[in-house]
Image 1: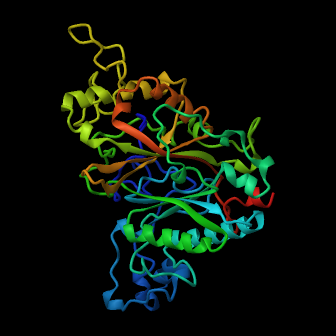
Image 2: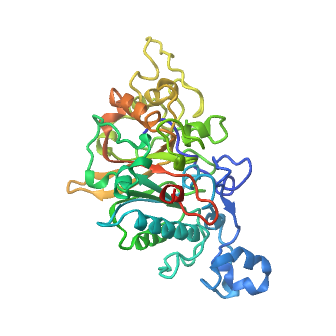
Length: 440
């Protein structure tokens, strides 16, 4: 849980698709404000060409009586773009609900089957993100909802390339992550041939996409593992705020921003990959996924002051213990009257600062999770840690190695699952995700 923020929580009226809004929006995948539901307003399609244009390919899917057709709030009507330079779900503002899913290709399935599967998945993702039905087997779960900022993102695991005869196209950056002392990894919930990230601001919309993706897998791939997560709902606070995790802490403030001049260099693979790179990964990114269990019973026994010393920031507002506001630069040399460092030497925020890790930068975009309680009432809860970078050997790995050597937070968390996936660039109109790899 590095001290680099997740994409900012936001008031949907103030950030999504609004020029100059505080949320980090990718120009290629920026959210488009439709203003009305593509589904619920179809009942008025005969009254105005404008509504017909907004409905697009969803015509006939949900014809509600015109008298009952009322616009959704911006929460449901917001739409993220499927096609673009980068895949959605990387710089898209954080969503309220998420599902992470990994699949393994079925026995006997290879490149041909994988190609057909990515075609199906891409078409389904495009439809659902536009607020349209999934296809001939649509379950109607989200029939009455708008797009709700749905994003669907696809990636390839290390094992995918051997299964499809594409070993020569496997990037060096996808080499397995090293072992860390904090790892207690369940292999059955780690890695996989294929990875899918689903996010939305409505739980039914997110589940609808999850079910459609699973159905599309058919006989080509089987489910390996699946995890469910959540965040604060957009608009739940009076103004956009950095989210809190299940420890009650403001979870990071130092995420790289798309407006920064070196953002693309740090987060996305260049169009001309260097040594060990692959041309098919141009404009893509590498994602590290970790299921991090929080030992909440132990954490909650600490005083607020002790919790703040572990993190290095005030619990109330996320400001560094050295003073100021949440975004104030941390003074790592500041001492108190007794000459003691104000920000402890092993504080999580100190260790994870980019300037303490050779400039290593990650875009963190996690979800919290809660999977119930054990027989003793201990919560199985924590963070689905998701971080993006142009090269995990220069991003996640050096930061995690340093955390491994002396992070005060380590005794209150446990890494229980892990995965590394190559996420190719976005699909152009008429193309599917991964096409340069599978047809190159």
